[in-house]
Image (tube, rainbow, N blue to C red):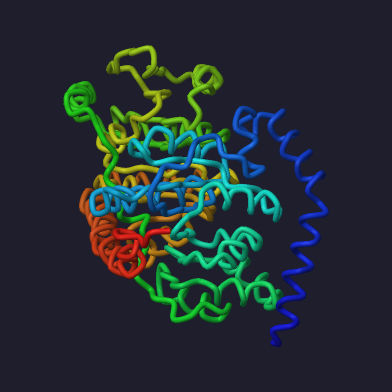
Length: 434
C-alpha cells in the first residue's frame, strides 16, 4: 500500500477528531456527571497536567485498564531499582485503574489519565510531559496519541502485545491506518508466538514472543497472624471460595452450597463480593434462602452453623485465596469478562471459572492448555466440578500444582523485557546537554 494512502488515512482521522473536539469534550463532561470519570481530574482528559513534570529523563508507560495497569507494576518496581534517576509517568484510561494504581504505585511515580485522542489535547500532553521513551501495553493503540508521539522522534515500544481475534480482524480491514502505527514502534514484545504473528501481519517489525508480564505480579499480600486465626476458625471444614463475584453469581454460589452441603458435611462457602457496598443486598438474598451468614466487615465469627462467610472488605483477597483450596473466579458467568486467575494460581488454588474470561483471555488460554483450570458454564457445572474436587483431593492438588507451574514458567519474562529495554534506557542515564 502506497505511502500516500497511509498519509491520507491518518490525515482524515486527525481532521475528524479535531473537528469532533467539542462533542468529545461534552461527552467526557457527561461521563463525569454520571460518575464514570473523576470530575476533579477531568482536565487530564484534555491534556492538562494536574502535576508538575519532574526534572530529568522520563519514561511514559500507558495502559488501558486495570489488568494492563497491574501488569506494569513488577516492571515499574524493577525500573525503580535499576534506574533510580529515572522518572516514571503512568497513564491509564479508566477510573477503576486510577483508583487501584493510587494505592500500589511506588512513591514518586506519577499517574495521569491519558488524553482523549484529539490532536490538540495529545500535543498539549506531550508538550507538558516531554517523554524520552514511551511504552504502550497490549493493544492500546490510539492513532493520534501514538502517531504524534512517534512524529516527535520519541522512541516507542509495545509491551506484552496482544490483540483479540475480533480486534485483529477489525484492524486488518484498516491497513492504511494500522500499518504505519505498528511500523513506527521501535520494538514489539508479544505475549506468545500467536500474538507475535498477528503483530507482524499488522506491520510490526520483528515482534518477539517473550511471554506475559501479567504472570510476573507478586502473590497477593496477607496478614500472617490473621491467616492463622482464620484457619483455626475454619477448623478443617471443607470450603471453597467464590471470588470477586458480581450480581447473579452470589445466587449461583448459594445454589451450589445447597446442592453440596449434605454430601459434604460442614461445607463452608466463602463469598468475596467484588463491590463491598452490595453486602446488604447479598445478605438479604442469603437470609431469604435460609442460609446462615457471617459478615467479615462486622467481624462476625464463623460458627459451626455458619453456611456462608461473606467477605465484604477491600484488599484481603490474599487471605481468602489462601484459606480456600479451590476458587471460582467471578465476573465470568455474568458478562463482566472475568477477573484475574493469576492471583489464585500463585496461591495453590484449584481454579474454576465461567465461559466469559475475555478480560484475561490470554491467561485463561495458557491455564487451559496446561490443564491448570476448569471452565464451567453454569451453576450445575460448578456444582459438579466442586463435588469432584471435594471428593478427589489428588485432582484438586494436581490442578493447583499445574496452575502454579504455569506461573513459574513465566518467571524469566521480566528480566527478558528489561534486556530488550536496555538500549533505550542506556542513553537516559547520561543524557546529552540541551
